[in-house]
View 1 (cartoon, rainbow, N blue to C red):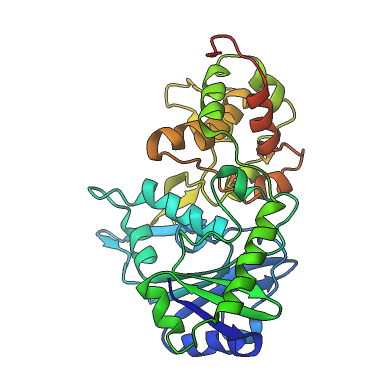
View 2: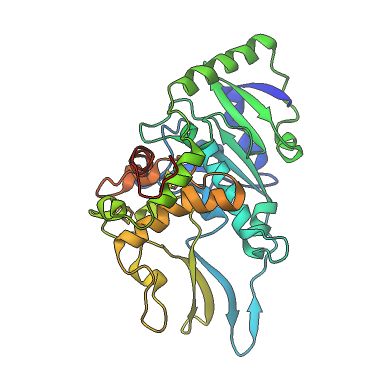
Length: 338
Ligand code: SF4
Ligand code: SF4
């Protein structure tokens, strides 16, 4: 892969050049929080993002509330032609989540055109996570703070300069004028990568975790781990790989809208008959965890949690999905293969 090199001063000027052709989204200060938002000038961008912004970048492709169509006697579909965009400054775990969501939303036979048009018009430029937060565990679930797999380019900060891995043709367009990195510079990046990865958690044994969780399905394990859950839905709303939504007709606005929904809400699975297949927080917590560590693995062969740590950090009662996985790995459930 072509590897380029750029100083901090010059990197900070690049988004202003991109703005001539693209809408640029990057972490900017929004009240007390950082959020991926449309940038007017490079100076707005927060360059040293210590940990993941509270809201993941998925909202750029799957907004929290999105108008699908409007009607005033006849239906008007919403224009799906998107301006070309650069999404800059997300960490590799969030880039991985966007690629995971492609599995759910870009079925070749029946793609979600709203998601697909935004995806196709966007160049993803990630920044390596050189000081992961205490809640981060990407390496436990198949990722890395330096993962190059899911972005169009990855930028790594090394001693106040930046290495740019150009990973796709789309990414190359943004960095074509930069000089190639020299051998000594590449070595510095490799050294840093090894050092940061060595301090991160070890990979979960994916198959054992999958099988143990399946064996736990009908046990009281889920009562135990869900006991303090408030059903607030924060863990799913902030999760970069959760994608459930509800569609509502707003009759006053005369619009059909889709809004994020959460499997942690009681009404999420409530059927019109009054029956609810997930009537308590036990079934709902089980669903959230099984979806990440069992159902994604069955469907696409990889864990559906990217280890971004948001659900760990922001759960108001400190329910920790890492601890649930570790606990399930070390228990013996009836019917488990020895
Ligand atoms: S954030 Fe915590 S309390 Fe809220 S629904 Fe998720 S697990 Fe339950
Ligand atoms: S389950 Fe939690 S740690 Fe995993 S991707 Fe979602 S928010 Fe991040």
